[in-house]
Image 1: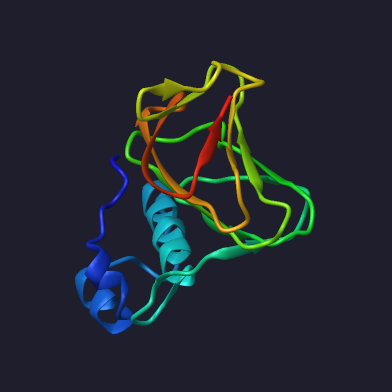
Image 2: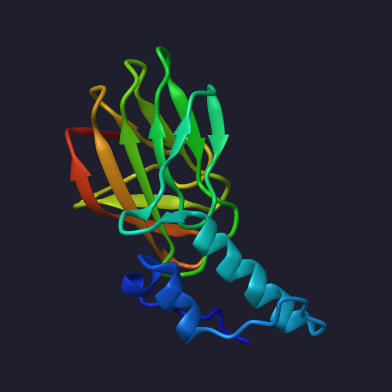
Length: 159
């Protein structure tokens, strides 16, 4: 069963969202339980009228998940690692705030592309902020392995 798609505008108002989606409160079928879990996750990450809520990262390392939206806030470097699994179309947004900046590390078999520059394939390749407030949005273009920068603010380091 495909993952349900929900129009972003519907996520802004939970009452509208509930009018467009029917999910049983106590699902007995595995597919219904998975869909309910997915939608509950979407709703919990949304505040009315503001879109997805960003997670503030203050630890030195953090594993990103599909459709992550994070703000790094640490005096020293924050290393973020791409998710091990991600469907094509998955997005990740990283915004810097702390003076230490951020670095997005890859797992084995993964690679990121920024304009005409590619990271080194696999472990060891990464994108990093050059200054405190640099930001990037990535989209997964090949499930689990390939990511493309679709938006950036600042000068990113590509290794």
